[in-house]
Amino acid sequence: MTISTSTTPPVLPVASMRRTWHWLTGEARRRRAATAAALVVGLAAAAASTVPIYLLGSLIDRIDDGRSAGLVGLAVVIGVSAVIGGLGTGLSTYLIARLGESAVADLREDVLRHALDLPATTIEESGRGDLLSRVGADVAAVAKAVSQVLPDMLNAFFLGIVTVVGMAGIDWRLGLAGALCIPAYIAGLLWYLPRSAPLYAQQRIALAERAQATVESIQGARTIDAYEIHAEHLRGIENASARARDCEITVFGLFTRFVGRVNRAEFIGLAATLVVGFLLVRSGAVTVGQTTAAALMFHRLFNPIGMMMYNFDEIQAGAACLARLVGVLDLRPTATDAPQPPTAEPTSADVEVRDVSFRYGSGPLVLQDVSLSIPAGTRCALVGTTGAGKSTLAAVIAGLFLPDRGQTLIGGVSVPDIADDQLRHWVATVTQEVHVFSGTVEDDLHLADPRASRQQVLGALDRVGARDWVERLDDGLDTLVGEHGVELTAAQAQHLALARLVLADPRVVVLDEATAEAGSAAAGELDAAALAATEGRTTLVVAHRLSQAATADQILVMDGGRIVERGTHDELLDRAGRYARLWRAWRAHS
Image 1 (cartoon, helix red, strand yellow):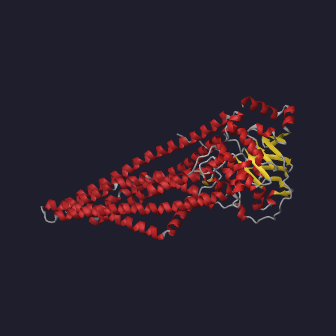
Image 2 (cartoon, one colour):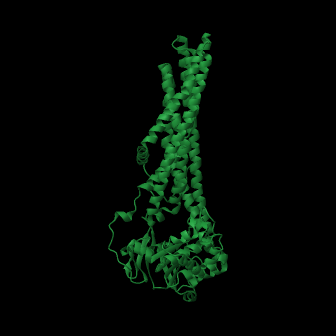
Image 3 (cartoon, rainbow, N blue to C red):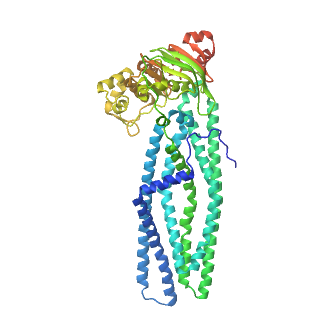
């Protein structure tokens, strides 16, 4: 089966194998004591678990020779050695898992820290799905490999070393016979690894693309519904799911062929051990008990070595995920690398866009020669179908993206010339992806202004019409919300976001479909809350519902990255153009 290829490779980089290995060895060096303890205990446990088999061979020889003296004591030693070996293996598993989990915990924090520091353009170019897949599914896959797979693999590796040494200790020819399986195992791995590594990397990319397509469709469900573009988005999800499915099937097919090669290596090793043992016993070089011990030692390796070989499936997946995470770690925020430009502070809240063009990376132009002016304190609505460039233009005005050509000015000052802290004070953005932070309601609102008094917080809630429902919560402002608290509705979460906007008190506000996730029952209430929160501020609204555009001082209709119509609601209806058609379609649907 062939794997469907993607036409949109991820922008976020994937680290090379050498770079990933360098990260791993660096983590081991940082934890020298824990690494050394895990290695020593693992080897000691493997040695202790080999002792009972070695003594079992001696027991067989004594019985064969008719010597009954000391059999009970020997049996006791075998039992004690087995217990010590089991306890040691358990301790080794714990130490290895603890070492790996601490490294994964640091990795998770480092990746999140780097992700939060990445430029907005990097996130938008790669798509949120790629980053979400890395910090979510990829971290989980690495954690699973470290806590469940790695301890078993290392313990199997230790046991293999001790077993070969033990067989050679009985007779070097037995050790050599057992070692004949090694070339067969290596041949299997050399066949499997070069074929599986790119497939696992491709699988992770396919899963990230599927997540991206799903996230976009869920978050933009109401926009998709409003403009009746369900079929296009369903095709996108189907294509992404087909690529992920094809990758999974191809990887599984390759793995089953690998299993056959592992079984072949086991047969070679055991057959060689038995044949050589038979010849050595016949020549009197070794005893029956010694040959039995050697054969049992090798046979006992079937399960751990088989597990180690089969777990290369999980290790390959974990390695592919780790390479994607290390790729994020290697990214550096571009803003910190460049010298800071001269800074200036706007003198008014006028917004002007002059001949702006913008593209994501080396892709096609998303905005083309866009010009507009929003007088201070007025409200401007952007209208258009999905992909028209509305959100991109909003992000450029907010200073999240820098245009390839043209200028964006606030109060007559070019956005790149405004210091970041000043820009965040002047401009605030509220999107449809509203997040409720874990903590109390008051803690959530204090993110906008940590110095706000309780009266100011209540005033902000009152302004957006949220005070009543907040006070009806069991503990009012002290109610725990978020992941570990009360689950708020979409409308309540958007109320909190608008209240944070009031507390932040920006001069310019960008609402990028900020109330799009509200149900129809709360739509009018949230639109009124947004109007109250932005009263007196220069406001740009990416309109999801055309009722939001109808109340704006000016409406800009976008298509293909250009502004194709502009005017007030009544003016655009009188022209009977694109906006009028959108309005009729929206009214008919709603």
